[in-house]
Amino acid sequence: MNFTTYNDPQPSMLKTLKNESLIPSLSWAYTAGAYSQDPPVFGSLTLGGYDTTRFAPTSITCTFGADQSRDLLVGIQRITTDIAGFPLLSAGIYVFIDSTVPHVWLPIEACTEFERAFNLTWDNHTELYLLTDDEHDNLISLNANITLSAFDLTVGWPIVNSSTRYFPIRRAQNNTQFTLGRTFLQYAYVIADYERSNFSVSQALFPDASVSQNIISIFSPNDPFVKQHHSPKVIIGTAVASFVFVCMIALGGFMILNRRRRQRFSAERDNVVERDNSQPYEKPELDTVEVAIAEIEVMEIATNELDAATSPARILELSTHVEVVAHCELPGISEGRMTGISMHELPAEDMPRYELESPSPFSIQPTTRRNMML
Image (cartoon, rainbow, N blue to C red):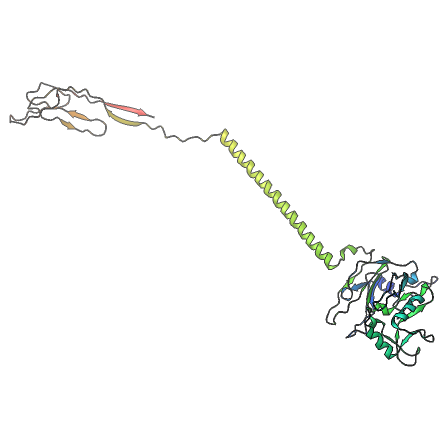
């Protein structure tokens, strides 16, 4: 509320709290609580935000009315009950949600239909629908499809001398009096945002006392950091999206680096192949060392038959490079001379004779030939 005038405007309590940075925005959320619940549920008022544990979420929002004194204005199209074959309100009306009054103010025609449906009696002195205990018990026994406990209120002094039950609807004289008071707000949760000029009305919940509050701030649209303040779902979604984005960047970087590595490796391999083709490897060869190979010159052998006294030739093997074969001539053999060989005559004793294959005198002139091989 703001007790001010246009000539001398004063900041409201909500505005003062906002100016002192005690609340983030000009907003509030409220439910009147339900004393008729067992156990009774207290009301809830949150400035600058709302409590998610006290209402069932809804996507319906309403804009403020043009009249600042009746800004929380909603439309009611129809009111029905299962205990009557007729509607309690058949024509649509606009009503103001006001937490400063306890009653529900409806058109006189609607009040008349309530009287018919619930057997109510209007008291002209108090201008209330007072109830006796029997009438109260009768209403409970109807088991109407309406939360009668919300309408189970009492009134006391100075309106009446003693505490008396009453049905909290009242006759409005004109449309400016159509109002939904705290009777309605027992089972409704209202969130009002004066900086965005909108509000919402949701079904109130009655959590157990052990349930902790979950206060969500409503930030001003002029707050430079308003985009940084989000609900838990938005924060989780942002975190997941950021994680996926980082993973995609990392994967893309890895793929680019891997492709560049493959390209570099392929280029190096091509360079090696080109170098191999242009500069073939030199094949190692042995040193050109002269190797002397001793050979015996082919000897001409004359095959003549030897005499019986001929003995086998004595062949002497010379060292390393030269082989010299000495043939000694026995008695009875035609003279044959061999250079550098001395001859000795054996005693004239009978010797066994061996016939050789076409022996003939021959001479051997050993020679040495070196072949140079590279």
